[in-house]
Amino acid sequence: MSISLQVLEQAIDAIARVPGVAMDPDNLVEDVVLLASVWEDAEEFDYAVASTVRALRLLAGDRVDTSDLAHDLAGYDSFHYQHRRSRGQKADMRIVFRGEGGIIVVLGFGHRRLPSDVYRRLAATR
Image 1 (cartoon, rainbow, N blue to C red):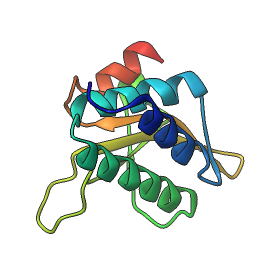
Image 2 (cartoon, rainbow, N blue to C red):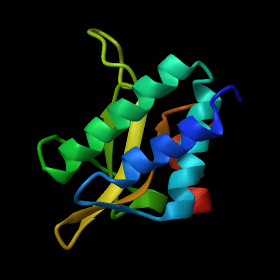
Image 3 (cartoon, helix red, strand yellow):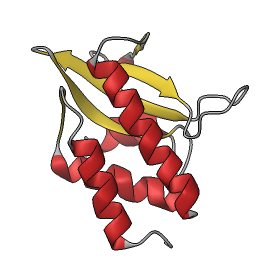
């Protein structure tokens, strides 16, 4: 992995500081490390982190449409977004969460398919 420990720590801190959002600290670290394994280029990783922070702020502000999940993730919702905002690019990132007492409780986030299917990973490990 070519993303430095310092950059990983900054990414974790930026995501953890989003107001109105709660997440298990160990899961947050795991998700950021997985992002770094998908985007080993520092610039692309920075875009992915910034887009994740932006997406979390939108979710916390209840300003976006989300999708209900079923089966092993019933009770959670999913928000789809681009790791790098670009016209015509498909949403390649997901945040799995639920609203709870006025805050967004994040189960996890990551690339839709890399390094593995985000929904399967979250359902199996959390």
